[in-house]
Length: 128
Image (cartoon, rainbow, N blue to C red; front, side, top):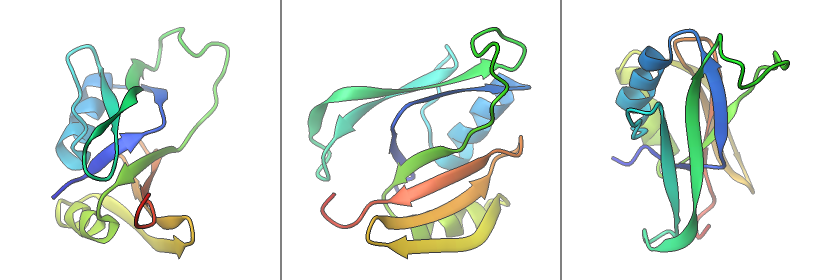
């Protein structure tokens, strides 16, 4: 089953970047590299490259990368099959929020990561 297939781009901090990166790799299928992040090449529905890359990186919470900001965030990840992924995450013991939205913009569901960040999972409408 496909899990996360892309993101718009996000950089965020964590108390334990290595452990949080490992959680994302295990439970959401993010290909976290030794440098602490991942790069997603843009593809169409058939998996054909369309040019471009989205960057994702976990930074140390005590780092200066975000100074002076102390803001919180929510990451939106594109997924292939939201219902199946939410069930797989529940089966793996993840904290999946019960609410799921289905609108003209697609299907949305949420899971909480081990550090208390709300993660938004988005399945675009068919053909997008």
